[in-house]
Image (cartoon, rainbow, N blue to C red; front, side, top):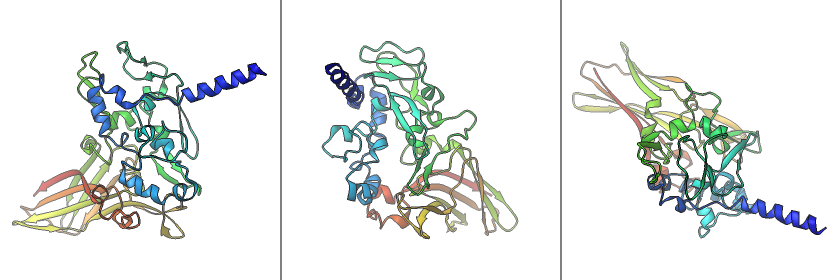
Amino acid sequence: MLKFIFLSLLSITSLLASKNFAPSEDCKSCHPLIYKEFSESMHANSTPQKDPIHGSVWAKHPQNLEFKKYGCGKCHTPTAEKDSMPKADSPKHQEGISCAYCHRIKSIELHAKSNTNITTSTEKNYFGTLEDHITSPYHGIVSEGNEHFKNGNVCIGCHSHKMNKHKLNVCSTNIDNEMDGANCVSCHMPKVKGSVSNFKDRKEHSFHGFAGSHSNQDMLTKYVDISLLRQINDFIVNIDNRTSHALLLHPLRTAVLKVSVTRAGKTTKLKDEIFVRVIGHNGKPAMPWTASTTLKNTMIQANEKRSIKYDYKLQSGDKVDIVLGWFLVNPKALKTLNLEDNEVATKFIEFKKESFTF
């Protein structure tokens, strides 16, 4: 009996130990450049208190209002206690998605509803990709045997898909459709100048600011091409999305194509083209946990070349300015989420610009 109790306690202790993650601040002294990039990213600011959009959605979530269970924490605050409510004064909650957490993902369980990250129970033993790495005096480094770090899709534990109780895939990346061997890391964490650490001088490292819809969009512009075809009485703007997923994935996002023509010093703004995916229930837009179907989907899809025709006859000397960008929150949802006055939610983010002169 005593042996059983001892083994049980040992098992519990081991389980608790697996939840101890070094704070990201510990990484700063040896990895200052990477830490700076990370600290400004959405990974470091993924909590309801730091991300105003997530905070507004969470404020209306039934898990918050009725059940007091932070299910979002599985991906938004993974080092905190499971399902515990996000607390502003809790260091574990405010860590967001920490350095130690991502670098301890040893495998990913694939599920229909959402995937699950499995982290190693060995503290301060981190997975990486550098084969000629140094020996760190502070932690172990494992660069072999981790398929997800090797193929660059270590992100799919959280960024693959999310299915709600109505079996609606609220958000899907569709990473199976790869683009010429590219992956999550090669596009969203491209190689940039600067050393990985202070211990060994290297010319470059993987960017840890995570280029995406919130920030560092300039790193992604090369994957979307914009061209213009002039015809006799009109013209066509082509948007070629060469990525393996839709232009924007979250159902709150709204992409906008803005086109203007300048002739003899006078600028004429043409009608905006909107790209959006609206989810809803009973024919009306609804929150992700209530939605049962997709009401509308004009979002530019993976590997799609979208052509938009403008009934405007171009003349010699005309200049056409094109801007493709987005709102992080669909303007029609701002009032529902009490975000009408929020700068982040209302800002139009310019992604790519092109100009054509005839």
